[in-house]
Each structure stands twice: as C-alpha cells, then as structure tokens.
Image 1 (spheres, helix red, strand yellow):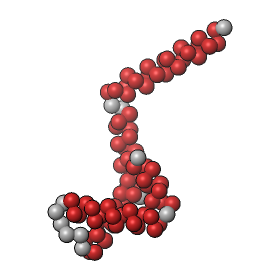
Image 2 (cartoon, helix red, strand yellow; image 1 turned 120 degrees about the horizontal axis):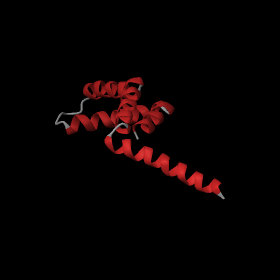
Image 3 (cartoon, one colour; image 1 turned 180 degrees about the horizontal axis):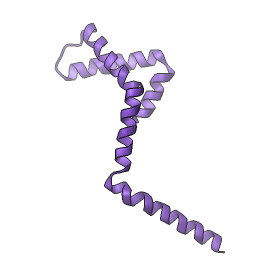
Image 4 (spheres, helix red, strand yellow; image 1 turned 180 degrees about the vertical axis):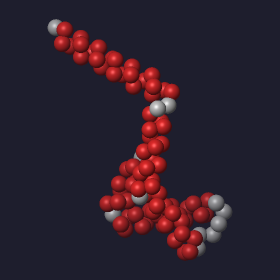
Length: 93
C-alpha cells in the first residue's frame, strides 16, 4: 500500500502537496500539538523524505523481512510444489 501511495504522490505534485499537508496536520493534531503553518511545513518536509527514495528503501526492506518471516518460509515452497504437481498431472495425459 505504501508503494501505491508513493506512486500516486510522484504522478501529481498538487495531490502530493495536499496529501502531505493533510497528513502533517493530522499527525501534529493527534500528538496533541497545534497545527500551525510552521509545524505543518516541517512535518510535510519530513513526509516528503519518506515518500522519496528513503521511503522506497524502507518499504523494500520491510517487504523482504515480511517475506522471510516464518509463515512464508513454508507457504511459498508449498505453493511451488503444488503448482509443479498440477503441471505434472496436466502433462501426464
């Protein structure tokens, strides 16, 4: 989902600015602060760093750690074996 948001931000600069401003104001308000223009500007700059190459690297590392988790170490090889068995069964006749 994070990669889809990053792609949407890269396609439209106006939508990216609007999204960053809204998110920054929401984060500041949720943390108990008052969303002034200065704090929104600083927070939107921080969010723009996360939407760029830094965010892409972090989301890729997160995805790799999820794939290497204990559930996928069993699930992915099992799916490959099942697909192989199905293909073997189809070519048998």
